[in-house]
Amino acid sequence: MSQRSESQTTRGPERLALVTLAGLLLLCHGAWANTPGKVRTVVVLTPDNAVGSPGSALFYRGLRETFAAGSREQLQIRFEPLDIARFQDARSRRLLADFLRQKYADQQIDLLVAALAPSLDFALEYHRTIFPGVPLVFVVLDEEEVQTRKLPVDVIGVPMEMDLVGTLELALRLQPVTRRVFVIVGSSSFDARWERAARQRFRRYEGRLEFVYLSGLSMDELLQRVANVPNQSIVQYLQIFEDATGKTFIPADAFELIAAKANAPIYGHVSSYIGRGIVGGRVMSFELAGRHAASLGLRILAGERPDTIARPEASPNEYVVDWRQLRRWGLGEASLPAGTDVRYREPGLWDLYRWQIVGAASLFVLQTALIVALLVQMVHRKRAEQDLRVSQVALRRLTGRLLHAQEEESRRIARELHDDLGQGLALLTVEMELLRQKPPEPAAQLDVRIQELVRQIRHLSSSAHELSHQLHPAKLEQLGLAATVRSLCHELTQRHGLNIEFSEDQIPAAMPPEVALCLYRIAQEALANAIKHSGAQHVRVELGRRADSISLRIVDDGAGFDPGVTQTKSGLGLVSMRERVFSLGGELAIDSRPSDGTRLYVRIPLSARATHEMTRS
Image 1: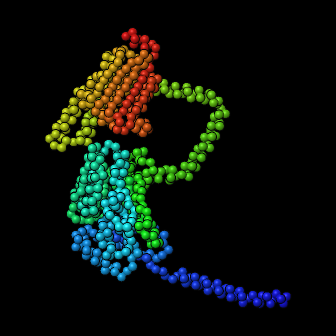
Image 2: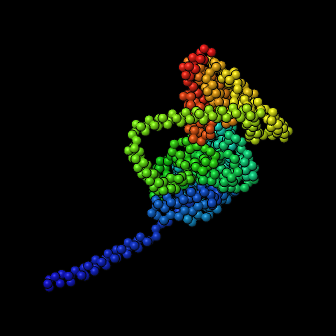
Image 3: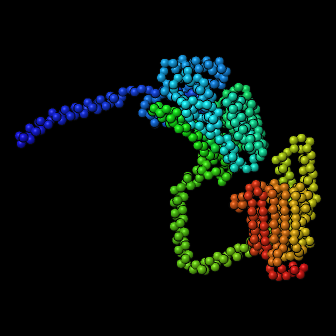
């Protein structure tokens, strides 16, 4: 017991000494940690005071965040706007250089960053006298701009690609019928430099596109021009730092003014324009440029010499589009290159009501499973399939009867009406729509067109027999299918100036009335669509006969359409065609693509009796 007490008494002072020593070590460590170290200074040169510029804000954020995350030293970043637009002559630039030399004469500068080509040119000219021995990192310069300059060994940077061509290619993918490209650029010396670059890069497209350069204009003149851009045109925005009146702009602010007035989609190559009215482009990122510049700067501040660092490759660009602008201009996402970043997409029903949909679907599935189980118990699978086939046959027969009833009703209306009011009004509507789309500029011609329309309206009251013919083609019974379709083609050619070429191969005058009527109605509907919707200049109509069938083929060179989309959105035109053909057991095929015309093929089989009667006739 006494030995244990003595041991504890001996260890007490030792423990106290150890605790005291540990406390002193912690205090010393805290003092060392809190001792301020050397502050490193980075000066960033910019060509102008771009406070409020979205691109500058992104560049500064990328620069600051990368410096803060990658350095344990204290860094201060000094942004120095040069206002080069006001210091363009040699004397003014020397005065600016003298001012900066005096400003930083007593300060230790560790790194110099030059943003954009004007800042780099100024730094290359004066940084030996203003910042002697300070390494220089350039940023936000296109690869071509870098190649035109002879850079000293202590100057390094990450070039970026101002991808004007990639942006134009994206626009042409989305709008393949483009005929004119309006290129917008300002009037400053920096703007003029990029206008020259655009002219050089777009030269290889001049054979297929007309380029209109909207430069050297005041902002008011520019807004008036973009508000009246003709059809089949796009706008490619480069930049506007200054207009023809000498008024200076932040390029993003100038773009927003233009986007509010433009009547055509606008494309651009800078990421800071996304979300401000631009459709998209193959864009460069100011934030990424700032991060790359800071990464190089950190390596230099850590002791690496610029001449020992491998020259970095150009910063990658990416395709970026604004989903809202795609919807605004009716541009399809299917034409976008793979990997395109689609921003500002509005949430769909699934995103907004995911759990509600899941719950409702689960309940529906459960109820459906119970119903199916009951049906399986009540009706054998084979009986159900047989009933389904019978129902389909009955439905097809019912469709045929409905179509037949529709034709009977057309005959009744044809007997009662006295003119072709419906067809006349339809044609009158087309002509008025054409007048609305392309009104003649001289007022006298407009008055003549209006008088012609008035004459047509008056003429409708005396054309009852023509409307009766359109509602029920009596020529089918009198002259046969081939002559009636030929007459239809001739009539539409005379009315609309459309070149319709008709040919027929061994089509007899006598054939089953339902077959003749079906093919005539399909020809009538297809030619009407070519006139109203496709803008076709030439149509070819072919009637042919095989041993056991009659075929109709119609080909036009119009605008075409997407059958997959049209099938879900069309009215009764295509549906009526299909039901007419299916009711007779025939085949219908439609092949069309946007800007590639439309091809329609119909084949109607003939019964053995009908074939025999046609052969005899």
